[in-house]
Length: 340
Image (cartoon, rainbow, N blue to C red):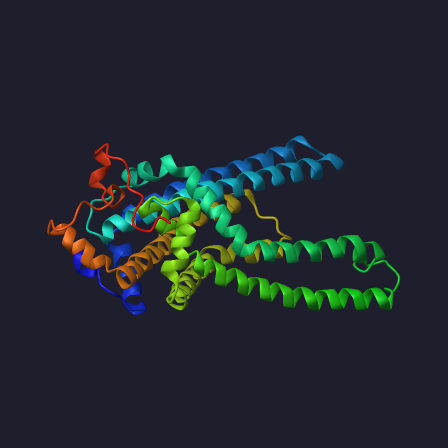
């Protein structure tokens, strides 16, 4: 395993990602399956609550009860995605680091390592998502406010409204064009910022850094390789979209034909297939980004030489968080060489 600690090309990182994923599939998929299982249970509960709302409420109250259940279920589901998904990414990152360095790894050890620092990882993801994608949210919010406050009251979207005022049409078209340009710029900004922060989770889990220190560490390490990181993320996205299309395409077509309403048995089947997709795809991102993290440390800091010297007994012990076997010791965790 130690022979992999050398500068790798993009193709070699992709090959190594596939190799680790294939040889440690049960480990990585097992970590992601906990997150996917939580989403599955919550989704099935939401389907049951919606059916209960339909049976308990009739007439004008039916839509109100269904909307309330759907909104509450959506909020709970998104919270679960954020918390459980974040922990699964951190746990997979920790497991990939161990396997890549030839250390023993297990599902329990990965989660037991990251759970005490749950708040740190969630705060890190909150900061990075906010810094990267808040401009997109701002552009969407401004456009939606314009539509609801100015355009909709004028009757532009009403089928029985009189012909719209030409001035209002000019405002609507101009604001729509501006929205598209601003949204494109905000998305480019979000992608660039996400690439800057792409190694923050590996830095936080491996070196036990605080959220802000991990962000600074990611900016430093990712410099010069963000194009390669983008290609990895794009490939993982294509795989995810492909699996989603294969497993969910049929349900999307049926939903469109039936105005978004699926039979209960079909909704349940859809959630079980989504469970498989989330289980299989989740480890790809964590594996690839963690390998990039180690590759950048090798390129910028000579981490491969540092590791070989340590194995030869020529340097003091590496931070305890680097080793799974060190979990049994009660030594304090070092902050790592990148803590600013």
